[in-house]
Image (cartoon, rainbow, N blue to C red; front, side):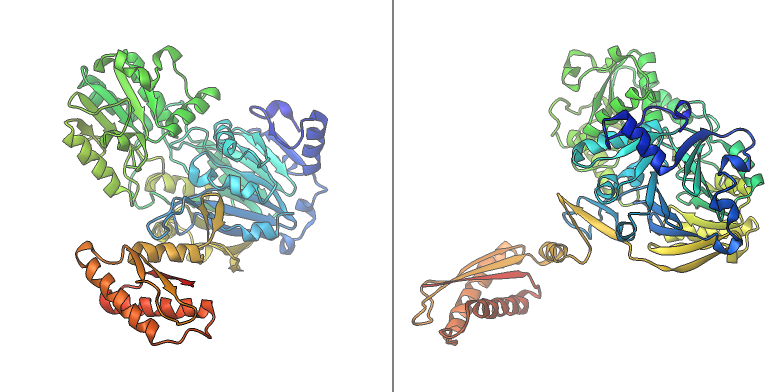
Length: 608
């Protein structure tokens, strides 16, 4: 392994012995190099390897979609050749209202667990949660080296602190590195996105080159001065691209995405210049390092101190500074508990909560539930983000509460205080034109996005038979001359519920849904074992079944009917479990007749 050409340090939890680490890397056959301007075939693999000896008939690469298609989130794709699998991205998503009590949703990796002896590497395109969030759970089942940019791996390391028992090995790479893993050669390509350290990958396989764009945009004025490497995409297009897998998030938006640098100009104008005497509170995504950098630069320019609020904001800013992606004078950063020592005109508070998350810093401020910050008329609050679909109600509720407290609120409908990190149509067209792929698979989008992306590719000259819209669990086979569907494997969702993993068929989830819709009823009966008569009046508890004004009447009727029901049965010879079941059915039917609801019903019987 050419250590001089690997960016950063290897994070290894396999062994503390350097010699053992070296042997482990050699045994995996890994090699990382920087590519030259012209990439000769010998740089990809020695002539003696299977790459040059197999016939086209044998060169079959299987592609399995475990997440990130037909949906936004939990991105994960497996590429398989012979006895080798590499995984691109390992994401999660957040639950919707149909999954009560669930913390996060991750891909079902049953297929990978069944083939874990084949898994050689996990390649991360960038550090957003929908691309790295399921790593702790995957690494608990599968041992494979992780590769990603320095910031991506720093965010992974920060996440893995909560899962100290899960051991892993990570190696940092940078654009223009080549990674050799068995029959795969992975090339990393610089792309712009709403987080630093984003990479596209070109996977050279026996069946040809596969380009996976990851999340990207083409920003000609990026904050870090490094644009998407469109030159390299063009070079690869001339060399020959068998398959393009391109993200589809903003494919429905015409034109180009705005540059991130535009946001800084707008923030300076609408916040810093127009409100020199007010306290500024700016809410944005913690992972948007370039947005944070612009806010920090403006704060220093206008001589304002900065306080970070929200756990993720504090953690990410510290990680980004540690790896050099975020720079600032520490003298300008203050603890939020010390803001009372400064005038409003001397403060900028950078906060989480741009999506109206219930426990985020900004939401708690809007609800007077934040210890050190009281919102008032001298506050100007900027939501430097657009609501993610499904979050609109939460976001606008927060905005309304902030307005009621007298604050001025600036958000995306009033000013261009946010730009997307995803490519719009013209940028997507550019990638297609540069790479000139033989086959195309749209990814990273709901079905409607991928459908529009397919139609866009056809307008650019691709034949419909060379395009496949994937589904979760779908498996494709790529050869030098063909791309076809070969079937489906078990895939879908795994539900992270506290410290346990479940699935959508779980009885626990079904019970929660029923509880949320119909409530529950508990009946406690004390019955004489000798006479089969009630010793005392039935005790009934209901929650979420009936409204207060009718509860007394219904409960009283239920108690009366239960007494009659008990007298009509001879329970002397009946087993206790059967007795409980009979009572439960009676109570359930009674409540349904009176309310048209079917609450979860429990019957407890004490024989005396």
